[in-house]
Image 1 (spheres, rainbow, N blue to C red):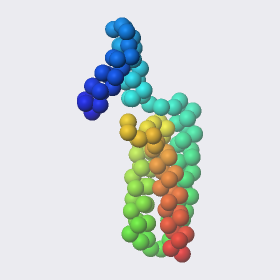
Image 2: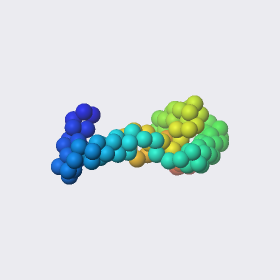
Image 3: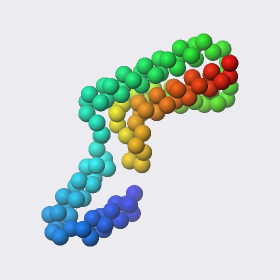
Image 4: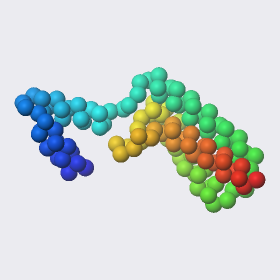
Length: 123
């Protein structure tokens, strides 16, 4: 991680003329890197969409008597992500990591759709 920041800092230095502009560039870079993306309204919308997707997958799960290994795996990931979301609803629109553009809500929606598709194929 430090190597990445060092490289980014050195790249930022080459395009800057003053110490103040270097500080501004580094500050802007770190703000973008570690900030929570999205507003409160985005988080609420993402939470609602993720909850709706989970409920749809949950209905399919209740109608399915047995799951194969792939379905169990996807369901376990979905359950884990959903528990994280319920524990912290404000994190719905936050990026999962600095290396990913995906959010927790997007992962829940993706896993829900994948589970529903796998279940439909199995029938």
